[in-house]
Image (cartoon, rainbow, N blue to C red; front, side):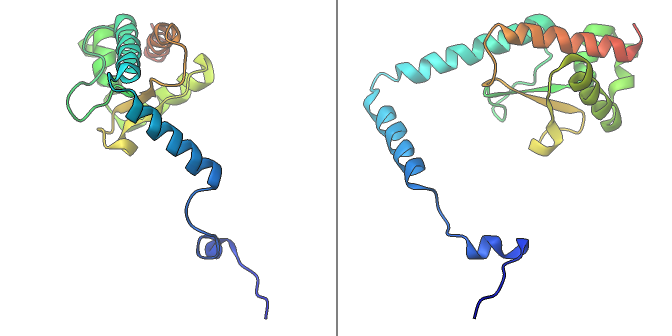
Length: 159
């Protein structure tokens, strides 16, 4: 009568949906949004994210972040060769124009600078992009993150 469930069957045997506390939290968030007629909270969040983008660009140079309707300011998407070109010059940017160079950079950034970023290819970006969450750190930390990205690029470049 009883049969064991292996790891491939858990999704079939598990109840779907979200828990009651999660449902209550979603309702509270929805009510908060509905009650904020002036959208003050949303405007505040947009201002904070725009400031974080500004601090990153201040550290990495104008044009480091990809912009456009397909990019959100909740995440910043950066093209490694473009960032390298702005910081190191055109001839050095070619070193960073491959997916392998991107992974070497991301590993170095995590190992030596303590900053973890994700490859942008998994999020619909080109293979030479990486993604930074703009929601996880204090606002001032994004200037430091930009400086750490620049340091990692200079170190990998040998300069």
